[in-house]
Length: 296
Image (cartoon, rainbow, N blue to C red; front, side, top):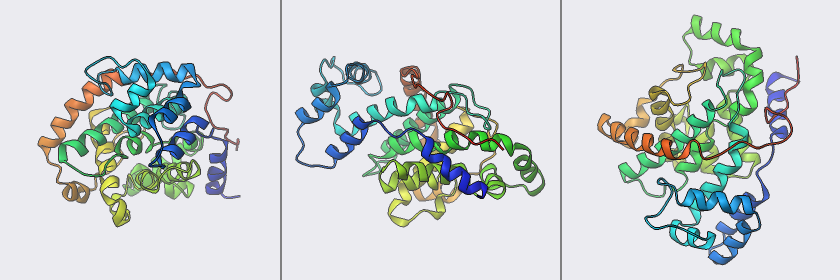
C-alpha cells in the first residue's frame, strides 16, 4: 500500500458527523420542513439545546433581544445559521487538540478554523457577494485534512522541509511531493465522506490552488483561499507550516479584494474571535487524537 493509500484509509477512522447534523442537513434540503420539526430534532439533546441558546445569544451569532427557545432561535437566525452552530459544536472535539506534524497546540487549529470561517463570511458580506451561505461552513472545515495528516507529516517532516528549502516549493506542494497527497485534498475526501455539499468539498480541496476550481464553485473557493491567507498573515492559529503558503493574486482580482477590504474584515474577525473561540469545550472519548494512524 502506498503512503497516499494509507492516508486515505485513515480517513475512515475519523468519527462521522453526529446524527443530529445529518438529520438537520436532510431537513434543510426539504423546503416544506417546519421550524417546529427542526426544533424537535435539536431539543432531544439537552446539552445541544443549551449550547444553541448560548450561541444564539452571543454577540456574533445573536439577536438584539434574548432568545429563550430553540424554535425562537431558528425563527430569528434562520436554518442555515442553526446548522452552522451545530456543525461548530460537532467538529470542535476533533479540532481542539494538538495536531502532530503541524506543531499546533490544542487551540491552534481551532482558532485558525474559526477565524477563517468568520473571515470568509464577513468578506462575502463586505463585498456584497450573493449565494455565499456556505462561506462560514467552508471556512470552518477547510483544514480538516490536518486532523488526518498530522502523524504522517510528523514522520516525513524533514523530507518536506528539505524540499521546501532546496526547491522553493510551498508547504502543500512539498507535502504532496513527499506523501502523494496534501492536507487540502485529504480534507476534500473527508468532507465528501461526510456527504457535505460539493461546493464545501471543493473549497477545502482547492483552498491552496483556487485557480484550479471549477467555474460553478470559483467564488467560494477564492473566498476561502483569501480568508485562509489573511488569517495566517495575521497569525491566527499558525503552526510549523506557518507562512509557507502562497497567495494566488488572481483570486484577489476575481473577487476585487483590496487592502481597505482586508483591514475592515480583520477588525470584524477580531470581534468575532473574542466571542466564539472559547465557547466550545472538547469532549470526545476514545483516541485523544481523533484518528488512528498506523506506525511505520
